[in-house]
Image 1 (cartoon, rainbow, N blue to C red):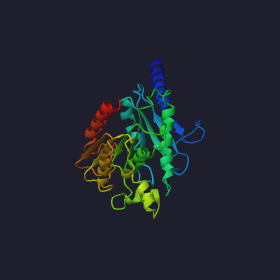
Image 2: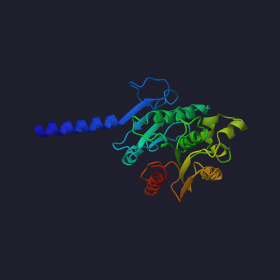
Image 3: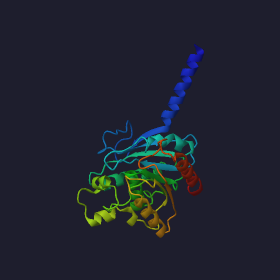
Image 4: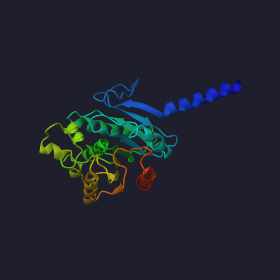
Length: 276
């Protein structure tokens, strides 16, 4: 009986510890107390899920899941990476952003607010305020690169960006058509297209980048990543580009991607050499 009681207490302690390490916080003016992420409502109430490691190394990464700006693939392009990130000492934050519905300022505002939120909690979460990065996959990669090129002040500027097979351009000949339509609407002006074609928005102050994709991606043309990479280099922004021979689009943290060992190892090495 004593052994069973001890086991139950140990299980409770472990569960309690895990619960303390996972926080759900709203963005904007919503009260934090009692806030819960609701993935059925992607129009209102943006928020973040924060996974805190036992031994933080001072670095935080905010993840923007993909989904063509019509939904959010928050599992394999979001929460599934938390344990791997925490094992490296990274404070990992999954962003639930508002869908644009033709207004690109909605997801962008949420991404920049997430950077601000994490930076303002740097002391509480044992973070270095100069090691706050943003990461995204597919359309989430567009959002992450949008935050990296459209930040408004030092509080909202990411310190680095990590992009999985990102949508970058809104040029109709190269973009992912669904992402463009959901972000900009049916018939956007040339000025609007150019404003959110992130390869055209790179500046020398754009944060350093790690980009990865598959050469056989049929969902988002590889030219998106290549054009962005070249624009970063033209502006003397440090950038790393990995193109894997196969794997298609949308692999995220899935074990089925044949180069998972490679990308995780290469990203870990890049983070250790360039960020940590």
